[in-house]
Image (cartoon, rainbow, N blue to C red; front, side):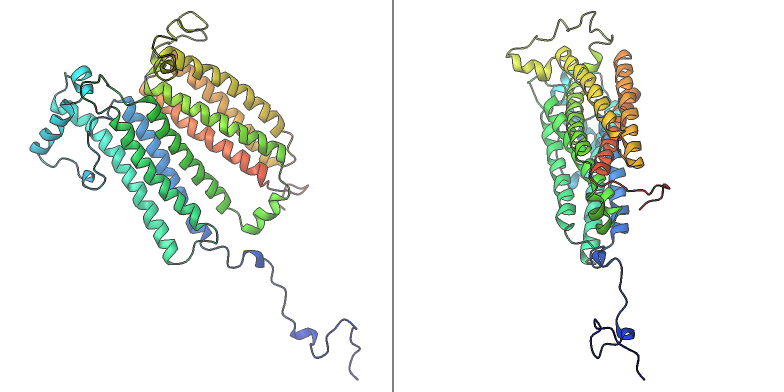
Length: 384
């Protein structure tokens, strides 16, 4: 005698013939090579970080104008013999930086600054090659997850734009008879700003690639909107401070006033407005540019504390820790900025200050990411 059947069971469809449920179908066909792409992005992140550091040292050693031409392909090869070295040195001797500032240089001295700038440009080519090879490999193998191709292409496009902006910056200092001994500070700020944008996008993509599409979708439902908004504001404010720091670096304003908290014994520097028209002072006056950078730093620290006070109320432990890390790094950065001023911006301290700015930038991005995509933990501390 056959067993009774449920009224909800379809005739001719025995229970044993039904396929078992398969968890995780939301991610099927959408994962691509997430792990491998994430490793590739991490390599790009490390290279861009190194590029920022080398770029800073190139500026601090006054090496940026040593190569007076932009040759994206043929420039990959350095001078190979004495005649080629003499030719490069002769080109450098024609520009204002040599005529006004570096007439003392001999060929051996020129080679030192040349190698710094050549290395900086070469590293840019390496980054472009790593991006092209990685993107091409994953694209050909069709391993890029849906929706990610435009994002990864954007990194390549911004990298190419960065190379063009780099030459636009250098060209402002390769002058004859104009009295320019450095690149234009606003062009330097544009160049550095784009580098931080590229680094920020890579960091964001690494964080998103580290979690599945299903995980991100679920986490977004627990988004802490107030913290997300505040961390977004902090991100923008920090970017502004980075741009102001680039303006300081572009005119060596960090070496013009080396006392703190006053500037030349005064709250407001006496030499703030020395150029005509007035707007030039906001880009070219060492006193005014450094003053603005200082005041902006104080305001940024205050806003960071406000954001931290809100962040520490998060119900998610990892989010709270992320905001604690932001506050600690920001305080350290402010202290290091003061030390940089007091010691007259020596190269080893100045480059550490710039490198720490990258760390602060990434930590803010992570805190923002965890505000939007929190990692939910159970009462026992295990991830949900």
